[in-house]
Structure formats: C-alpha cells, structure tokens
Length: 206
Image 1 (tube, helix red, strand yellow):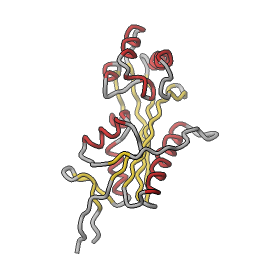
Image 2 (cartoon, one colour):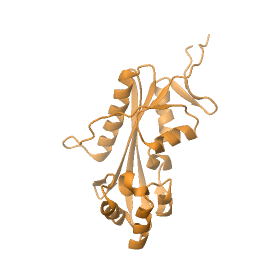
Image 3 (cartoon, helix red, strand yellow):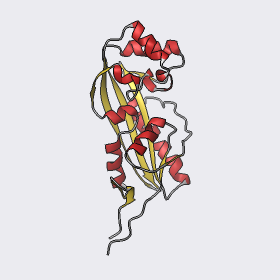
Image 4 (cartoon, one colour):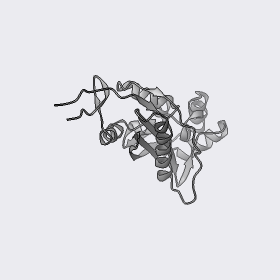
C-alpha cells in the first residue's frame, strides 16, 4: 500500500533574492540558510567546475546540519573570453564589465545542487547571452539604476538588464541564478517530486 505523502522542508543555501523569488514564483515553500564557504578557485579549476563545486559545497554544508531537509545550493559565473566577471567593486568596474560584454556574446554558467542527508545530485547549465551594442551613455545610465552593483557580470536579466540583452540561447532562469527545470529533475533523483499545487513532496513509499 502506498505510504503517506509528506512535505519535506526545503532550504535554500543562498542569500540571493533572485533565487528566493524563483522558488516562491513556482510555489516552493522554503527557508533561507546561506552557506558561508570559501569561494576561492583551486589550482587548474575551470569556471564551470568551480561553479558546480561551490553549489555542491553550499548544499552539503547546510544539509549536514539539517539532514531531513531538501537543500538547494547554486552558483552562477559569467565568463567572456575565458575571463570570469564577478560582482563589480565600483562604478568604474561595472563600466569595464559592461563595455566588455557590449555587442557580443558571453557564457553564463549556473550550477545547481540538491541534497538530503547523504543523497545528492548536481548539474550545470551553460547559457549563451548576447548583448546589443551599448553606448557609453547607456552604460552610465544603466549603472545609475544601481542594478549592476550586486550581480555577477554587472547586469540582471530580470530587471533593467532585460533592455540590453539581444538574445539568450538556453535557460532564462539559469541566467537569473536558478535553473528551475533542472532543479526539480535533480530532486526526483533524491526521492522528491514537484507538484504544481502543493510544492515539493516526498515520493511515497510503496
């Protein structure tokens, strides 16, 4: 006989407001428990592997303290010409990044990891994003909005940054910071499923 379906707690191991908004948007009730980890690169580590390792470490850290919960970790990296663009340190730094991205394509890597106790799964999404050509005046005006200052690559695609993006080849939500479709498929591998009306549920025992 099928067992009862329960709602496991979902914990987001990230302080990103965008990731929280995405989980809320699709009806996944959750708590935020940011994971404080060392985000330095290890020797020889490529950006995609770095993002996946950080997502896994964030999820593992929070899951170790909350073994009954489903923990979601994520990390996003913006790369152009092999150079990683982090969060700008100043207006001038934001301007430098936006000029480097203007009129061309770059890659956004977003890794997502899910974990429950010792059960874990992770994956990475790579998305090609193309900016239209930006004048110096447009770059300055965009920086004036304040939006670039807390975002990798100095732009947010879900806000004013939508006006400077010409094309996206891949998962839009990955560019925002959390590939939702990939996340729920990973949850299925550790014994949970997504329900449109009820959020995340345990897979019932048979």
